[in-house]
Image (cartoon, rainbow, N blue to C red; front, side, top):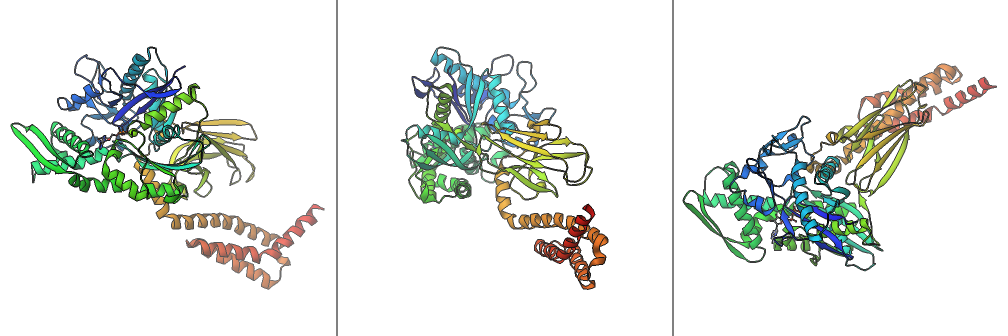
Amino acid sequence: MAILGIDLGTTNSLVGTVDSGFPILLANQEGQRSIPSAVHLPQGDGPAEVGITALRQRALAPERVVTSVKRLMGKRLSEVDPTRHAFPLTADRDGFVRIAIPHRGQESLSPEEISALILKELKTTAETAMGHSVEQAVITVPAYFNDAQRQATKRAGTLAGLAVDRIVNEPTAAALAFGLHRSKERTKIAVYDLGGGTFDISVLEIRDGVFQVLATNGDTFLGGDDIDDVLAQHLWQRFRPNHPPLAAQSAAIQIKFRQASEAAKIALSEQSEYIVRLPFVEGEEHFEHHITREDLEKLALPIIERTRPLCLRALHDAQLQEEQLDEVLLVGGSTRMPLVRRFVTDLFGREANTSQHPDETVAMGATVQSGILSGSLRNMVLLDVTPLSLGIESFGGLMNVIIPRNTTIPAKAGEMFTNAVPDQQSMLVRVLQGEREMARDNWELGKIEVPFDPGPKGSARIGVQFHIDENGILEVLTRNTKTGKDLLLEIQNAAVDVDDHRVEAMISESVDHAFDDMNERVFTEARLKSEELLPAVDQALNLVGDQLAEEERASILDAAARVRRALDGSDAQALKTANNALDEATQELAALLMQKAMEDAS
Ligand code: ADP
Ligand code: MG
């Protein structure tokens, strides 16, 4: 059974399949393998237009042409910047984005419905080329897509009549395409993917036909679009000096300047100068401007520079130095810019591999994956990793990591928990994602209340198991091992309302706060110990204290007072030292207590 491989890009989308053992990309009737991810919803009852025809409508009816809908997938209205879109947005009852373009009796459409129109177009292209219908697909997503965004992508597939067999991270797909042409040696590679709307960097190891992602990083708000924006603003200033910025102009003007900028940018990848021409840009007025590659590079460099720390962090996470990489792979249309190629060469200290067509690598990889699934390509296994740590809140408000960041998926891990206080009726399992030591600084993905029979402290037995499937979707299972009762936490889409660029922020914050966080964790752990120790010491003194020498008794009281004083402060080390001193001072007391217990027993 044939399965399609689909790169559902922010800017462009492509489809492929495996034909007689070879992955190939499929062209539509106009001979295009790549179509713009644009959808035009015409007024009245006309059918939606997809691709280049939709994009052409942008100058005429910008408010009815949907582009970059991928940025809106699985997003709440509060998480997006509506000024970035030329079409109106609204929210559904749960706060999720809808595109407010009335069409064929519907007041608005969800991002999934728009994506489904693009997928349907690709499906039709494939079916026409292959001569039969296809119902299954592999779709790629940026490495940093969260659960809500992956689910939304799957739903889009279903709406288009495609069962989504696998969601694959884009840089992983790129590496797959690359691996096809490699022998079985052990190779470490970095995949630098700069597209229209997203940037991904991944470090992978390929060994005996097995791909393993060692680390990933990225920014889903960084790409060629940003370069178009700064160039457009630059050109606008030349056209209308001392006017309000381009962003304050009409949608039609903005689109004209942005299209001209993209065309100039693309031309300047091949040639060193270019003349931007905008006839009748405003009324009778023409605009002409000579621009050099150097001018463009000055504007683009700060944007490209933003990829540097992300690359360095990925290398650091993979515990590799630049020189340990065997290969650096360039992916995404924006890596056609000579500036980007020089930048990457400089950053990694080597010439990047450009043997693959950078705009097609991801689709090729999706196709390879579809071939593995359908059995038409063999001898390749695919491993992927978690971008952020997953865990639950434990006693005292600490983050208890169950699946660490950069764990190979699919993954399954679990731990046993018990009640920290006597006669507790239930335990609240809060599922968290993030790198911070304290639960409150991480993101809550969902929670589940696990009931148990009240009993003494430590009597409950609750197993918590995390399972991440090959699509990166998380399931949390809790089991009361006494009753055998299981509870399954479905991570609701609505629960994962984290902003993508906060993922990178999370990682850098965890580095910035590492010292304070660690101090707070150590303090909390020490505090929990003090809170056990102090009442136990009081109780022991009541029971057998009279058998102690006065001096011994005084030193215990003194050590206990020191612990209480340290508890009022925030110095973790002081509290730990005080705890240890109290432990030390109560050796004899503990021995007496033990003796009494044995006597009582006999
Ligand atoms: P996405 O994965 O986000 O859909 P692509 O990989 O298709 O994006 O890349 C699209 C981006 O690449 C756009 O910003 C486009 O302007 C840019 N691009 C395409 N060709 C070139 C080129 N020759 N020079 C510079 N940029 C290019
Ligand atoms: Mg892409």
